[in-house]
Image (cartoon, helix red, strand yellow):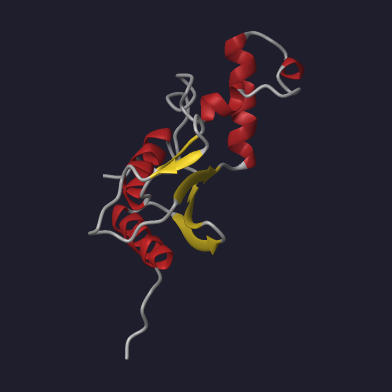
Length: 147
């Protein structure tokens, strides 16, 4: 008798297998709770393009989205051929050295003191995540974009 995986465990296993096949380092965890289930993908330091690629294939395992306008969950991506969950989260863990480099890059390129940014500014985060150009072209990333 074989063990039957829950939908959230099966979705996590499928995402984990795709990450491994693409050579992307990270962890994948599934959880269930009252009102739903989710998969959380935590990537090791990588380029913003790699994160977008992972989000693109991981989001097919999410069967909908939350609509804040009417405070409801919409089943907008329902698929019968895949195990799906309520939410898929993809996060990247950056090293302290990368954060320090982003802070220094912010100061050097925005022409202000770091103290001006330390009180809640998200500019270093915007550089690291690719919302503002230049940071990753100035650095050699540890991880290449997955093929």
